[in-house]
Image (tube, rainbow, N blue to C red):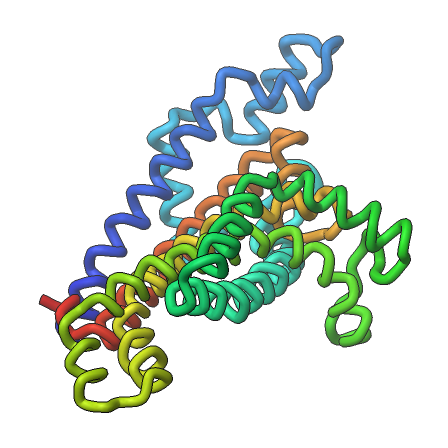
Length: 312
């Protein structure tokens, strides 16, 4: 297990370095000149040149890249071109908000999606077809459309939950949770469907295997067969789906944050993009890529722990 973990870590390092390098080159090779945008339409060529020099855009790309890599390795992601704030400070202020929404959404997706998948696989018939049909419909609904519907119905019409805004957990746990109910519902719906369908597929595959027939022939109770044996062996693809959904939810939360006016990392990213604040966008993308690599690594290690054959 230790050798497998070490091998996966070694694979992850060059992958992360490659992603970070690609993001840097793409963002710094944008066709529009950031200096021109900051200077305004009426700015003189001298003013634009001064801004380019101030931002370091007049230097060769390779030189800027080497300087950026050296700074990142020391934990320095640079400063915002808009307000001079540390990029890392801005991320630390907004990332926990998005992370809390994503984690809650994943917990809800697992808590609802796995039982639905198991129920569909074990009951069959109308129950199976009905649940599968419901998951197809849920996957087809865009999260921003669902978010708007939830705001209108439960936020404005019924007034059960706050329509917009965010309250810090330390300030009021109750208000924090009530403000996240609707965003989490909007973000988690598709993940519930994906996890339910993956669980159903994996359960059907395992329930049709010889070891299940042997357990039933030996008189092992159906509940034990389903939950202690079949579900455990079905956990590997479900865990893989869990990791994929973390990435999907992180991206899908951007629009949902806009709808509910949640001041998270997604809104911070869109604001930086609108301002042409390259250091902020670059820092967010690099840290997000690092989080994705770490999550995938964690999922691989959990799969290896559950299923030793993965280590081969």
